[in-house]
Amino acid sequence: QVQLQESGPGLVKPSETLSLTCTVSGGSISSYYWSWIRQPPGKGLEWIGHIHYSGSTNYNPSLKSRVTISLDTSKNHFSLKLTSVTAADTAVYFCARHQLPIQFGIDYWGQGTLVTVSS
Amino acid sequence: DIQMTQSPSSLSASVGDRVTITCRASQSISSYLNWYQQKPGKAPKLLMYAASSLESGVPSRFSGSGSGTDFTLTISSLQPEDFATYYCQQSYTTPRTFGQGTKVEIK
Image (cartoon, rainbow over all chains, first blue to last red; front, side):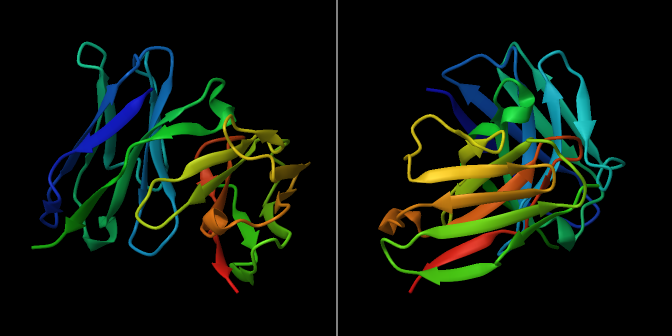
């Protein structure tokens, strides 16, 4: 059974960089697309971007100038960096795996990690 | 971006009721529409993909239909564990976008 686990600081200061890692267990990171999705407290879901195991990426234009998603196949994990954060970036951040083909939705999710942006 | 609009935003229903949630896309997305269920404090769970395909392990009381711009998720007989928030998501193009959610509450 594939499992995803987010890790990283739960508190980030304004203007600094949010960094999260998603460790994949029970399966290989190869062959799939992997996403980051966030959910501000009490609000809906926002897709941040995804990365293919080959390394190709696709980002939400609303965040593109601040986002980098990368992966490390040797460690079976992928990462998110979001620069110049503000209070509006406070959210639960989920990592997730897309089914194949990618259009068939997201079948595995991490439990989510709350990141608060505050001084 | 493709805007996804769900209706209603919330509804109250009783166990055993038939429940229908609607999702409308701002442009045609063919059948590239997925439905998720989210319970408080949990990650979303995939229910339906490609508009009408039931994800493995999901009870058959859930069904989906539609193509183009208009889609529906139906729960044929609401069960206690179905009280949750439901989201549609288009996977036709990037950025992937979600509806605002429909909260199904106990009547």
